[in-house]
Image 1 (tube, helix red, strand yellow):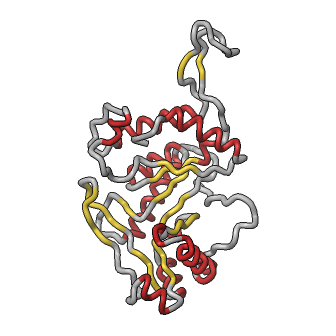
Image 2 (cartoon, helix red, strand yellow; image 1 turned 120 degrees about the vertical axis):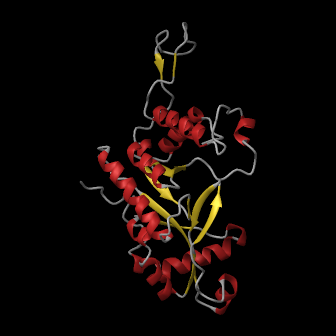
Image 3 (tube, one colour; image 1 turned 30 degrees about the horizontal axis):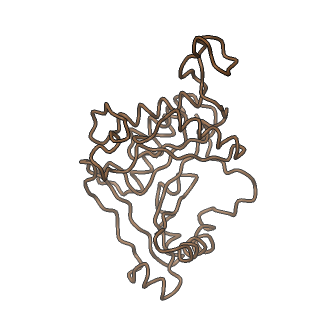
Length: 275
């Protein structure tokens, strides 16, 4: 959001959701750690006092949420040109998609942002990096984040069912070629602790192994079991064929044991947040 115009994004998102008949799933976040020094300022977005731009991203996201829910963003001119609006009448963005708010996912990297996401009534996605570290495994730390999100969602009184996704790097080993490509050890290593954006952070492990081994490890991952959606991170620069093979191997040999099935029954729904 640091680089986005919130009202333009709101118009584009609403139009796309209407064109797609409500099938949009729009993931939004503050943005990755910067390669540029306060690069958002070069795009005309000034006023941030946070070196990461988190404050300006949060403010613009709140404007975006207000806009897609039909709140007035400006007023009509004294003599509106080519418009049915009354002079100085409040104006919302156009078009409006009534259900768009339920199709927005915020990328949360901490329990604090997970709580805010729940309060806002959004869905939550959590990646392979958390800007927290307390000695817990990545899966346990992320599961705590999901619990915080759902509790905040429930306490805010939202009635719809949110979605929760987590991301994992998973490479099934089915051949000697796979062992060469993804690691001969078949373990993928463990979680890592490091500093990112000046914050002590936890980086999730990579899962590499034969299908039975992966099934056992993923079932032991508390966050994978708590989320309703698992996203696979893939080596995009490795080409289409290899990435398709990774996804096919996971879908065939691992995912069914985790409760996944091909989607032939309509839109995916999340797990109800009960009192």
